[in-house]
Length: 315
Image 1 (tube, rainbow, N blue to C red):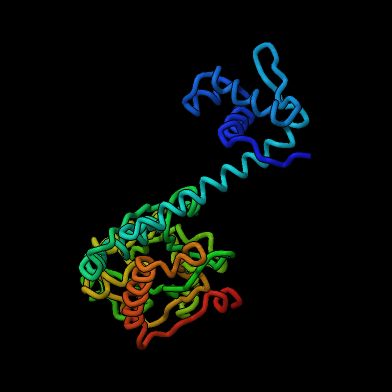
Image 2: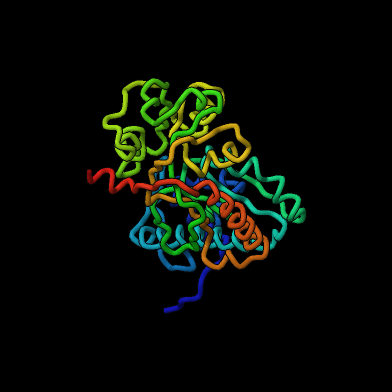
């Protein structure tokens, strides 16, 4: 049996036709004429010595040999495409494409970008703010900043921020409060982007952690944490602020966190990239900068009382 592979162009024509189940659709995708595509598939069938398609009146269907070839052809071209993208990105030494959630991009990355630009003018950062878990190859992403529980098998993954939450508000509002109990008389701002976490990290959990019993009901709800923080910045109430997103506002005094009890969670932010990519000079520089910036957050933890969410849930 001759295992010599046929021409790549013929295999590409077959893969497209098998995926579309249409010669004309495949020809349009590959930007060739239907006649040219049909010729490529015919040459492939001659190379194999058996038909790959049954030509029907207005359609085509795969033969047994075609069904055997189609999955491998599809996987092979997908792997080639991924490898080509990875090779191309490896030559772009001055560009890093980063994906992170919209709130983290708006409240943590964006306010600090000028520092990275000053320290590394030779590197251009490109951002894709999305809650979708992006694929490094398909979406041409170099680095992902992910929040949640670790599930990064096969990838380089390093924790960068351990999340904790505590009531935060504008200084003018804080001046009216003398104890945590006074929060019962304040509008509580809720953020729903962490509702997937178990155990929960929300106002009811914090009130129990502070020994205040049940939390009051009501208050506006926000699908994104950065919107809840913006409402607190505007004096709209108290937010159970996430240190990852509110550290800059705390540092410049726009928000204050007057009470000691804080909730901690096993969910955390990670710096994730394809295994081995962390050694590329521009990605290594970005990781080093991220770690230096996130280390500054720890200063806000001094003197606070931390209660794990799991402990609160256990009662």
